[in-house]
Length: 181
Image (cartoon, rainbow, N blue to C red; front, top):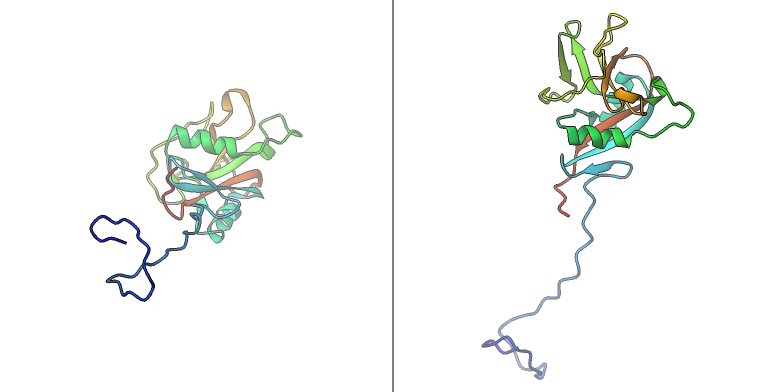
């Protein structure tokens, strides 16, 4: 190579040169921001996973064991729409009963006077279904989302018994890195 202009030239291998060329192998394809069975959402730089048939406590424990996550905390309408669309449709149930609900990380304290996220993030967003929270049993302290088109309740939050098993739960954890597309 000519040092003046960088042009390649042919020369005998016996002539010493003041530099060494290094061939850099192609890099590995970029790793995915989420592990298998988790879904990435770029607006939050987070990973989400659906679990089936758990109580609120069981679901949060399972989220933590699978990568350090928690039941999802929701901080925007975009995120709420995204997670609602993750909830599978169950063709055997066309009504708003437990098989079509999904636990998320909202819980109430002080007889529902205040609500918190299980991941300790700031509670700054909610969209309650009509007549919710209701505290119908006197201790309905855990949040769920209506995952089937229940009319005005679709994608909106309700409150339920934390030890009840519902059809689904939604986990959330930070992505492994910021993914740029």
